[in-house]
Amino acid sequence: MKRRDEIILTALKMFNESGIHNVGVREIARSLSISVGNLSYHFPRKEDIVAEILVHLRARNTVQYEIFFSGEPTLFAYLTLMRGVFLNQYNFRGVVISPLDIKKIYQNLFDYEKVEKERKAMQKDIFQRLTKAGELTLNEKGSDFMVSFISLFSRFWIQEAFLSYENLSREAVVEKYLWTLSQQLAIFATPDGMEGIELFFAE
Image (cartoon, rainbow, N blue to C red; front, side):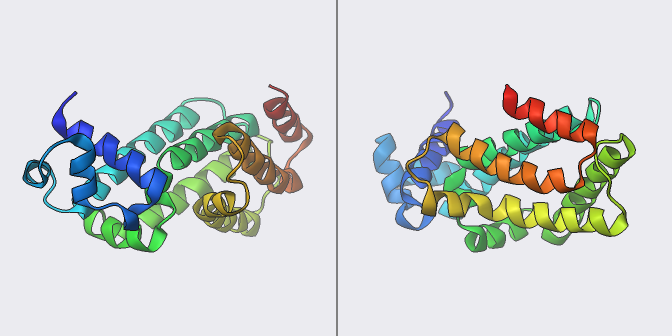
């Protein structure tokens, strides 16, 4: 494994265990048994390490969306997509749980407003596809509401999870919040959509 990858994996593990604020470059270097200078050669600042981790997270989420868009738009497929996204967030929780700190780094790394608009447009496209496919019954206002709901829910579920359900396993806590999400979807689901929801949780 390349040194750069070792640094990323070690830093992510430490961020997940202790949080971004409690882990510095010295602690990361010590864990790898390398000098701070060696680490700084690859990543001059801790923010550069976090930025690289965010790139990895975004790439993993992109894969999940590509899988969804490559198949038929069903609520079963959508919940499968969100399971993948939630598992990614859990695995990268050390950076996901610190949204204000991450926003500053994200703004320097990407065009934040552009990324947000693209994310919301993609979610709206998904809900429109699900409606057209006969899985949901959403009008324009309903689609906009679901986009806002998903934006809020996907940002903050993991923070509540670690405040209230730290004793649960990764799989158990992700399934719990997927079930909550499914109940919101069920309000607008058609019989076909409900069948997909039930099938998803029957697996």
